[in-house]
Image (cartoon, rainbow, N blue to C red; front, side):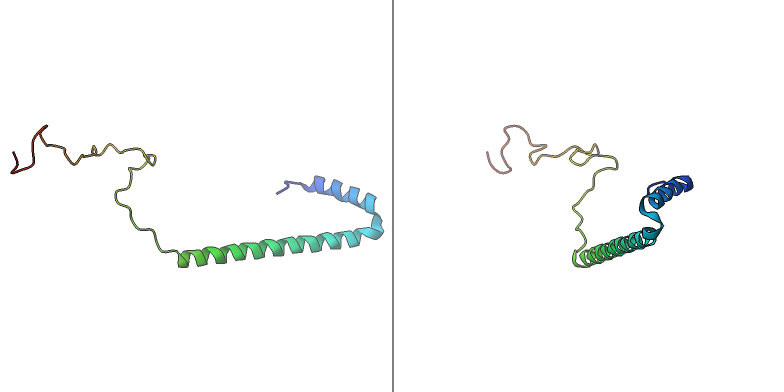
Length: 103
């Protein structure tokens, strides 16, 4: 996460030892350890809660109904496909022609 190597950690620990001194260093390390433990516990609890919510959502949400023909692969949504042109209801009717049986 921090990508710190051995020498970087050694420098940081040396500075902490010089600033805090040998008397306060064990208490500081202990409190940092407790904070890390609490952070891990919080992260684990949050992850478990999210997994429970997702499982519950998957159980209560019905599967999506198919909506008909799906667009061709790689075709952006809303782009007409080139498979067949759209048809109109009056396609093939003669211009000015009346319905069957009417003059």
